[in-house]
Length: 486
Image (cartoon, rainbow, N blue to C red; front, side):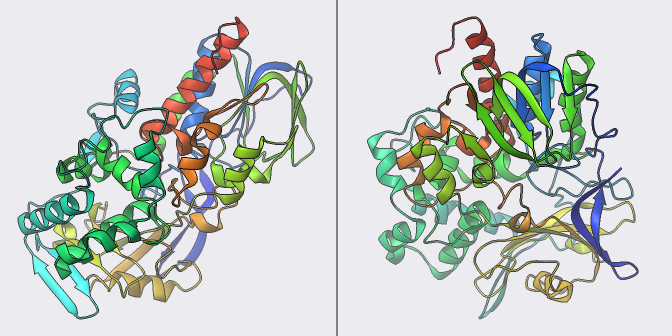
């Protein structure tokens, strides 16, 4: 099936909206009656919502899953273009992420992973491009450069951040955490500016902007430190956890396992292409009304919507002040993620940073297409932000900012213009978590909130989404028997 989401471009077909995706579910709904009263309504079919819907369905509850899009997966989904998966959003997984690995093992998918990198042939170089020109390094030299600059960046305690953030899975921020959250990356770079070489400065800024999709001034230093701590306080850990291993069949091949297990229980009703307009939380029931005017009733609701779209829905009673304020502020990640199929096979083993003159900052060879061509993925953000579909020639020229390449195909999803995301993965501006983290995680009446955006561990990641879906489902089940703690 083809989703309405995403864009693809080739010389022959030009720019076209919509991308084939195995997560585009048909039929789009299995609801037989709108008079059914459910135990729980789950709003949002990203990984948090899929996990919550599956766990409550497996527990025997009567569940309705509502999704605004025509596909499942939320901010993590993959194409199926000639059988090849281009990852539109969240991509990489690792066995060091305990929650997602539990699910990978549950579905027997341990052997369905592959490395994004292949340094066995081709140019085997790291290209560091700036307005002054392009420097070429071996990958060993790249690793040494990145290790050095990131160690300087995160070494706030003389121990590479190990004492500053020893417990990155805590559900509460310490006074030290709050101090670092009120600091921007730009603030931290001022502190160490005389300790960085020009190349180290280029690399650390490029890495930060890859992670946050924001600017140096709008990126929380604490959240960067949090990612670093989750990755074991090492650069090698960052590469392994953040950007090395992916599903051979694409993220959508993983998401459908959750959906199929829930559906097989016979307890799951679902409706796609049904954006929610309003939520009425009464004393003993929740009424969820879609934009099409359909109203559904349940005892509980699990909101699995991202932070940046919570304000799209009218809640009655309104969201509590802290949660509403956080939703109004939102997170800052406006990542541009674009894929290119190129004829240059030797670039399979290239990695690169092109900064600060280029709109695409970080790129690398990510696979080999069925035609034997190289697949390159590249990332930009609020720094020199652009919309790839507005000028495809500019988008192609941004790839040339790394090195000359012959682009045959371009594939992407514009998360900034996506009304059901309003940005890519969660990344906060300074002060957002210090002010609102606990409030974002709290239930309100009969509504539980589940999103990777406020996970205690792998916030912004698929692992964090599954963590949150698990937590919300467990709390609903516990509340039904009078044992809920939050």
